[in-house]
Image 1: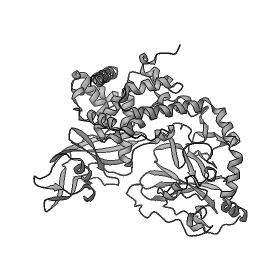
Image 2 (image 1 turned 90 degrees about the vertical axis):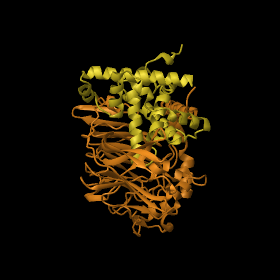
Image 3 (image 1 turned 180 degrees about the vertical axis):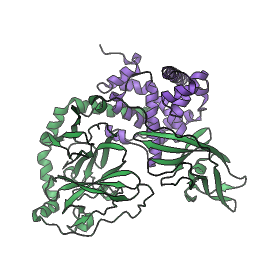
Image 4 (image 1 turned 30 degrees about the vertical axis):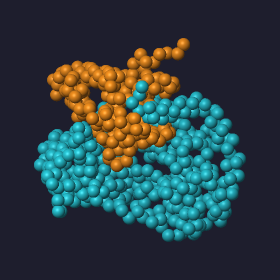
Length: 418
Length: 187
């Protein structure tokens, strides 16, 4: 008898499907081929706008894609670093023709490496005004340099990682990323064949070649040397859930497992060549073993911790933990976080998601702590986290108890100041 | 005749789970309570804990070929994944789901009985079982799992050889697993 039967069933179903799929690669290929004719027929009906644009060969440039407008240098993703943006010399044709697809790599001020996928015209990355996007104006809309948010197709990873292989299933030919309108387009009245499956990645300097599934069987291609970049654009007819994204990644210097339509990646380490075929064996296939944890806790520094409560007419309207930073936060790989203890349990806390100078005042909201507190006091522990590759080291800095004065009560958690 | 996997070691189960379904099922049932218990006491929310349990085991399935049998038991490897997934979820302020996406695990709707089971786990004194370990094993497990010390650092702290430190952690985790499973049956 298991504790969580629904979790067990979901996992075992997925495992059964995974093993069946890997036992029947030939059957899967035949099924993919059988979709070609109807997929193309529906594509001809639904992608008339795209084809018309392709036939003209020239697309007028429209307004830029609106910037998210929320990026700040020392906060969350940060902003594109000076000179850190590069449109790679990599083009993938669209199945219906027209402008090719391209990939831009952007390094940010907080240590992220972001990749964006969109259509390319005149060495500029952008989105198309088709299929309902940009009021169907038929124009090319350049992506601004700071388009790093979730609206665009792509991904951001902490740049300590050597690379990743990723896939997005269900992107529109316009290259407009996932948002509510795109999601609604996956309803029954939109053909899967009108959407795209994008496989892309940065596999690192040792990557040489990829093999991938296509409607014509397994193909191979060289990757772009240096970053090991690749980009494949196909109709979303290969299976997988629409409007979904997946990714496999590996720390610096290690091979990455294939993802998306990739079936194999070939790496070259000096005179040694290895082929990784996507069953999670990347390390052993290339003769590596698991390395030691690279992120180590720093020396413990006990810092004075202060709780600040704002009370108005016996109502707590804001609550913060305040202390001086013993260690700086210089990138997204570092940060401060709190855990709170109460009600015989450990509650997840909050943290800072921005840069902090050493010695600067750190202020962390206690809104979620008070929201979950079941008595007039809650114990809070503070720590400094530092990530290197996959590993996160936690350095404990101290503990403090929050006391809610008798007679006072906490304002509704959603209305507490943060 | 098919093998009875119930008696297999964790290393044998992980070695076979990518080609057969039963070894993974046995591995899941063997360690579900340990992982669920570890997670619910840290996040305090049954739905989040259940999602992370699924994510941890999906990641374990994907990474099974990378598991190297050694002095470190599979439980430590599994809790290492759990720790990583929990921290990543907290850091990103959303439940980590990369392994579930990779494996295409269906969304989980937690029934009331499972919520109650997780809440019962949560209500247990989190440090009681650890406190019941012999002192040498308790200190070794606490430092290795909670403080994330590597074996060289642990050996220096305990003033033993790294091999002896590994052995203490291994024994402690095995003892914990047996007690957790035993309590699970008795409950």
